[in-house]
Image (cartoon, rainbow, N blue to C red; front, side, top):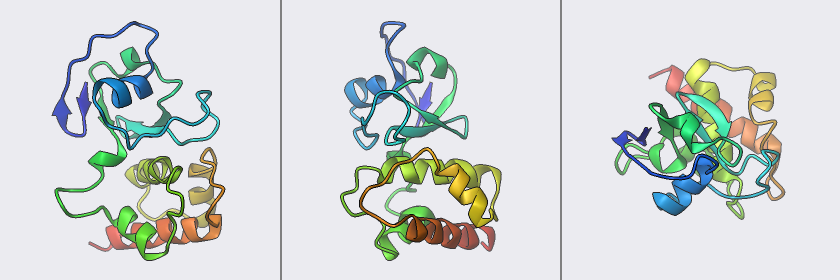
Length: 151
């Protein structure tokens, strides 16, 4: 598979989750382990541009695919517009949900550059956050989408 633009090869058991491979084999610890059942969204990454919960996505299912984690959002030292908007609006408080929230938003923007608020809410519906306001998260995603669409 390709992870954050780099080809990687990992040997693991067939039952190994993508989350385990990312965190334990590749030391990409931005992807968080929360519920291990696909309910909280903390482990969300994109696989071929689509949001997946890496805790219930087997690593073998990513064979030959492009995986992007939160570490792969920035371009060198330049943060992605989503990351900038989250910072500007004070979204990240404890930060645990932030990587998964960012990756769910990125998957949405991969498909639609000018989503409605309802589409944004649907895209992040599987991501739980206990510290921040969902309104400011939606606002941040909308701001980033506008910035990306008008480049």
